[in-house]
Length: 329
Image 1 (cartoon, one colour):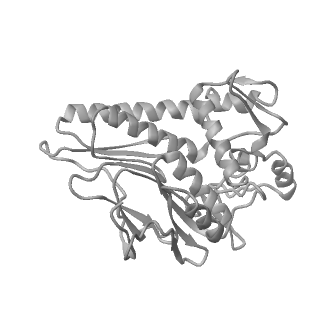
Image 2: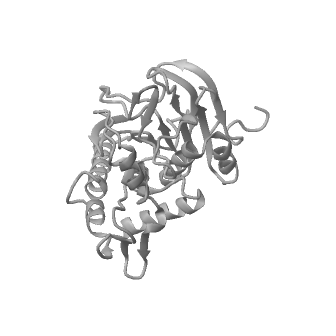
Image 3: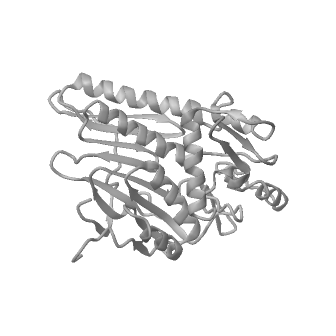
């Protein structure tokens, strides 16, 4: 990172869109709908064929991860886990085992504020149809939330749920993982300048050929407004906001971030943006800070090395970690 600008700016800074590039322009950009979101890749390549092949490889990897980790595909590895793990230990891939182990680490670190078993409640919501669980359903589902119900056996490489009704959802965690894998693919193909985006998760490789990538933090209450501009190089970024999937009922905003302790949508902040070296870390901390709120969240961020945060609280006020401004700012 090379500095930061905090101000309200109109327009969609850092949001990519499809555009036609000239034959001598080394920038190549493509966007596809995968994993329930827009996957965008923009990169520089001196050789257009090599650049297009690199994007093909990224999109193929995104599809592979989607097929393995989607809770909506009955044949996915994640669906198989949710179907069978309460009955018996389920053999899983090393990739899935590593993800579940990393999720458990973040759960322990946050005292359960990050918990992939939130899905017991999360699956009862339909944000498009404005459907939410009844109080009776909520109480029952909350009893199945608890990361310690997910038992991993490293030697056998299996996962088992220690009680019925437990289910897991990797949600944005899988997108952070996908962005990390995509960045590794581009590095292997000697791509030195790129921006990969999967919904609220992004990774920039290098700079934008002589200047930083300018990534905007959206105003949570204005689709066309930006409240901060982050000049970034070689950084992962994740944003969780209460505006992504939500509905209003009686003045209450029900959104897709769930507090594992209550099963309800946290209302202490409007959005959290995390910057770190990898997408799994940024995605996990964006959920953690959203759940615990500004004060506890920033205290946790300040205790970690190489992690920064931009938080917009429930009143619309902007907060940020000390590492963003730098000396003399």
